[in-house]
Length: 183
Image (cartoon, rainbow, N blue to C red; front, side, top):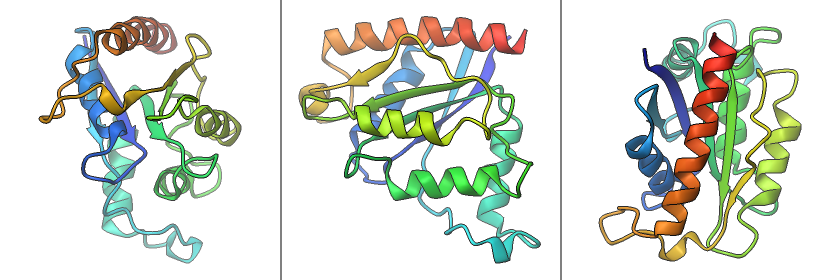
């Protein structure tokens, strides 16, 4: 049985490294995981006034999460935090109060940057945002991918072997975590 994992891409840039990493993860995933790469363009801004009659884009995103067995965030770092589109998606999925669709689901976090720090501040902010609205967060291995600027070819295919190895190791740990949490 394959667990369906919503893989949320924290950037909406067409050539984002986060999207390329999420696509590489989907290709490298073991048979026990089906990574559904999910981009966030088209999710309207959260507004509590709309909770009584949520927009169709919220409902579609929420339904995808509801049917999942886990969530994997792949995000860049913007100004020492998560991108606004990612925070907005978290707000959409975690509301109304007490009805978070992340609750009880195992969560993974992979941050990335073409620079030397690998988006560590974004990952740490997710670790601050999610408790109370999500299930357990995979603690090890912590994965902050740095120097991703030269990891892909012109077609978006992963070519950097060291990064491929790190992603494969992460997927093995995440698959075991998901199975344990869903077992």
